[in-house]
Length: 205
Image (tube, rainbow, N blue to C red; front, side):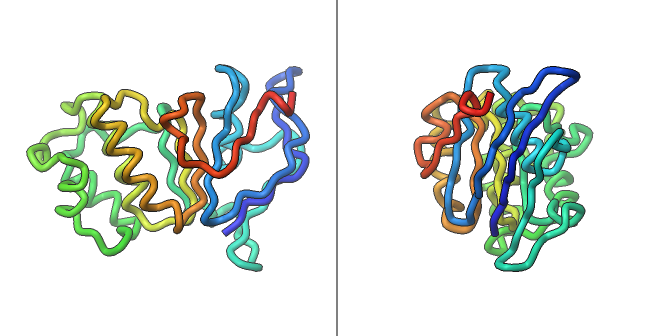
Protein backbone atom coordinates (compact mmCIF):
# COMPACT_ATOMS: atom_id res chain seq x y z
CA UNK A 1 0.00 0.00 0.00
CA UNK A 2 1.24 3.50 -0.82
CA UNK A 3 -0.04 7.05 -0.52
CA UNK A 4 1.58 9.38 -3.05
CA UNK A 5 1.32 13.12 -2.39
CA UNK A 6 2.16 15.69 -5.07
CA UNK A 7 2.37 19.48 -4.63
CA UNK A 8 -0.19 19.28 -1.83
CA UNK A 9 -1.51 22.47 -0.31
CA UNK A 10 -4.40 23.68 1.81
CA UNK A 11 -5.75 27.14 2.47
CA UNK A 12 -8.70 28.47 4.41
CA UNK A 13 -10.11 31.63 2.87
CA UNK A 14 -6.93 33.50 1.81
CA UNK A 15 -4.45 31.97 4.25
CA UNK A 16 -2.32 28.98 3.26
CA UNK A 17 -1.83 26.40 6.01
CA UNK A 18 0.89 24.62 4.02
CA UNK A 19 1.97 24.23 0.38
CA UNK A 20 4.12 22.10 -1.93
CA UNK A 21 4.20 18.86 0.03
CA UNK A 22 5.67 16.04 -2.07
CA UNK A 23 6.16 12.67 -0.39
CA UNK A 24 5.22 9.00 -0.44
CA UNK A 25 3.94 6.97 2.51
CA UNK A 26 4.73 3.24 2.22
CA UNK A 27 3.36 0.13 3.90
CA UNK A 28 5.57 -1.19 6.69
CA UNK A 29 6.88 2.32 7.38
CA UNK A 30 5.77 4.73 10.12
CA UNK A 31 5.62 8.51 10.08
CA UNK A 32 5.00 11.44 12.40
CA UNK A 33 3.62 14.84 11.43
CA UNK A 34 5.14 17.43 13.73
CA UNK A 35 4.73 21.18 14.13
CA UNK A 36 3.40 23.78 16.58
CA UNK A 37 -0.26 23.83 17.53
CA UNK A 38 -2.24 25.23 14.62
CA UNK A 39 0.44 24.38 12.07
CA UNK A 40 -1.80 21.98 10.15
CA UNK A 41 -1.02 18.47 11.47
CA UNK A 42 -4.68 17.52 11.85
CA UNK A 43 -5.56 19.25 8.57
CA UNK A 44 -2.97 17.22 6.68
CA UNK A 45 -4.13 14.01 8.33
CA UNK A 46 -7.74 14.72 7.34
CA UNK A 47 -6.61 15.33 3.77
CA UNK A 48 -4.56 12.12 3.65
CA UNK A 49 -7.54 10.16 4.97
CA UNK A 50 -9.80 11.61 2.28
CA UNK A 51 -12.01 13.52 4.71
CA UNK A 52 -10.88 16.98 3.57
CA UNK A 53 -10.16 18.02 -0.04
CA UNK A 54 -6.87 19.73 -0.96
CA UNK A 55 -6.76 23.29 -2.25
CA UNK A 56 -4.01 22.32 -4.68
CA UNK A 57 -2.09 19.21 -5.65
CA UNK A 58 -3.32 15.64 -5.40
CA UNK A 59 -3.25 12.47 -3.32
CA UNK A 60 -3.17 9.02 -4.93
CA UNK A 61 -3.60 5.64 -3.25
CA UNK A 62 -2.07 2.41 -4.55
CA UNK A 63 -2.26 -1.24 -3.59
CA UNK A 64 0.75 -2.68 -5.37
CA UNK A 65 0.57 -1.22 -8.87
CA UNK A 66 -3.22 -0.91 -8.73
CA UNK A 67 -4.65 2.53 -8.08
CA UNK A 68 -7.32 2.68 -5.36
CA UNK A 69 -10.18 5.10 -5.98
CA UNK A 70 -10.88 7.77 -3.39
CA UNK A 71 -14.39 6.45 -2.78
CA UNK A 72 -13.01 2.99 -1.88
CA UNK A 73 -10.05 4.18 0.17
CA UNK A 74 -12.06 4.10 3.41
CA UNK A 75 -11.90 0.30 3.31
CA UNK A 76 -8.15 0.38 3.87
CA UNK A 77 -7.91 2.84 6.74
CA UNK A 78 -8.71 3.51 10.38
CA UNK A 79 -8.49 6.90 12.05
CA UNK A 80 -8.22 7.82 15.73
CA UNK A 81 -8.57 11.51 16.58
CA UNK A 82 -10.07 13.81 19.23
CA UNK A 83 -12.76 14.89 16.74
CA UNK A 84 -13.85 11.28 16.04
CA UNK A 85 -16.80 10.28 18.22
CA UNK A 86 -18.07 6.93 19.50
CA UNK A 87 -21.76 5.99 19.52
CA UNK A 88 -22.40 6.59 23.20
CA UNK A 89 -25.89 5.05 23.26
CA UNK A 90 -24.35 1.61 22.62
CA UNK A 91 -22.91 -0.70 25.22
CA UNK A 92 -19.36 -1.88 24.61
CA UNK A 93 -20.60 -5.21 23.26
CA UNK A 94 -23.14 -3.49 21.00
CA UNK A 95 -20.51 -1.09 19.67
CA UNK A 96 -18.13 -3.94 18.82
CA UNK A 97 -20.93 -5.87 17.11
CA UNK A 98 -21.84 -2.79 15.07
CA UNK A 99 -18.23 -1.92 14.18
CA UNK A 100 -17.34 -5.43 13.05
CA UNK A 101 -20.44 -5.68 10.91
CA UNK A 102 -18.48 -3.36 8.59
CA UNK A 103 -14.86 -4.18 9.44
CA UNK A 104 -12.97 -7.48 9.63
CA UNK A 105 -11.20 -8.23 12.92
CA UNK A 106 -7.42 -8.41 12.61
CA UNK A 107 -6.09 -11.96 13.05
CA UNK A 108 -9.65 -13.28 13.55
CA UNK A 109 -9.97 -11.79 17.02
CA UNK A 110 -13.35 -12.28 18.67
CA UNK A 111 -15.15 -9.53 20.58
CA UNK A 112 -14.15 -11.31 23.80
CA UNK A 113 -10.50 -11.27 22.69
CA UNK A 114 -10.72 -7.55 22.00
CA UNK A 115 -12.47 -6.71 25.27
CA UNK A 116 -9.80 -8.62 27.14
CA UNK A 117 -7.00 -6.89 25.21
CA UNK A 118 -8.58 -3.54 26.11
CA UNK A 119 -8.79 -4.50 29.81
CA UNK A 120 -12.52 -3.74 29.71
CA UNK A 121 -13.97 -7.10 30.79
CA UNK A 122 -16.08 -5.47 33.50
CA UNK A 123 -17.48 -2.92 31.05
CA UNK A 124 -18.85 -5.32 28.40
CA UNK A 125 -22.48 -4.30 29.07
CA UNK A 126 -21.75 -0.73 30.15
CA UNK A 127 -22.93 2.16 27.96
CA UNK A 128 -20.14 4.07 26.21
CA UNK A 129 -21.53 7.34 27.64
CA UNK A 130 -20.64 5.98 31.08
CA UNK A 131 -17.00 5.38 30.13
CA UNK A 132 -14.25 7.66 31.40
CA UNK A 133 -12.35 9.72 28.80
CA UNK A 134 -9.40 7.33 29.12
CA UNK A 135 -11.58 4.27 28.52
CA UNK A 136 -13.09 5.90 25.44
CA UNK A 137 -9.65 6.69 24.05
CA UNK A 138 -8.42 3.14 24.64
CA UNK A 139 -11.55 1.86 22.86
CA UNK A 140 -10.96 4.16 19.87
CA UNK A 141 -7.40 2.90 19.60
CA UNK A 142 -8.48 -0.72 20.00
CA UNK A 143 -11.02 -0.44 17.18
CA UNK A 144 -8.19 0.77 14.95
CA UNK A 145 -5.53 -1.70 16.11
CA UNK A 146 -7.78 -4.77 15.97
CA UNK A 147 -9.49 -4.07 12.63
CA UNK A 148 -8.04 -5.27 9.33
CA UNK A 149 -6.58 -2.38 7.41
CA UNK A 150 -3.39 -1.14 5.86
CA UNK A 151 -3.31 2.47 7.03
CA UNK A 152 -3.61 3.86 10.55
CA UNK A 153 -4.04 7.59 11.16
CA UNK A 154 -3.37 8.44 14.82
CA UNK A 155 -3.95 12.08 15.75
CA UNK A 156 -2.83 12.80 19.33
CA UNK A 157 -3.33 9.11 20.13
CA UNK A 158 -2.55 9.29 23.85
CA UNK A 159 -5.07 12.03 24.67
CA UNK A 160 -6.69 11.28 28.04
CA UNK A 161 -4.55 8.16 28.64
CA UNK A 162 -2.81 7.66 31.97
CA UNK A 163 0.67 6.16 32.29
CA UNK A 164 -0.67 2.61 32.09
CA UNK A 165 -2.73 3.49 29.03
CA UNK A 166 0.28 5.08 27.31
CA UNK A 167 2.32 1.94 27.94
CA UNK A 168 -0.50 -0.16 26.48
CA UNK A 169 -0.62 2.08 23.39
CA UNK A 170 3.13 1.81 22.85
CA UNK A 171 2.96 -1.98 23.03
CA UNK A 172 -0.07 -2.38 20.76
CA UNK A 173 0.95 0.04 18.03
CA UNK A 174 4.26 -1.78 17.55
CA UNK A 175 2.38 -5.01 16.82
CA UNK A 176 0.72 -3.54 13.72
CA UNK A 177 3.74 -1.68 12.34
CA UNK A 178 4.84 -4.43 9.91
CA UNK A 179 1.33 -4.68 8.42
CA UNK A 180 0.41 -1.00 8.03
CA UNK A 181 1.32 2.51 7.11
CA UNK A 182 1.16 4.26 10.48
CA UNK A 183 0.89 8.07 10.45
CA UNK A 184 0.92 9.89 13.80
CA UNK A 185 0.12 13.56 14.36
CA UNK A 186 1.84 14.65 17.56
CA UNK A 187 4.46 16.76 19.30
CA UNK A 188 4.81 14.30 22.19
CA UNK A 189 7.79 11.98 21.73
CA UNK A 190 6.20 9.12 23.67
CA UNK A 191 3.41 8.99 21.05
CA UNK A 192 5.78 8.45 18.12
CA UNK A 193 9.07 7.11 19.49
CA UNK A 194 8.76 4.08 17.16
CA UNK A 195 8.48 5.96 13.82
CA UNK A 196 10.93 5.75 10.91
CA UNK A 197 10.21 9.17 9.36
CA UNK A 198 9.40 12.71 10.50
CA UNK A 199 7.55 15.29 8.43
CA UNK A 200 7.72 18.84 9.82
CA UNK A 201 4.76 20.93 8.65
CA UNK A 202 6.77 24.10 9.30
CA UNK A 203 8.96 23.32 6.28
CA UNK A 204 5.96 23.79 3.99
CA UNK A 205 4.76 27.24 5.05
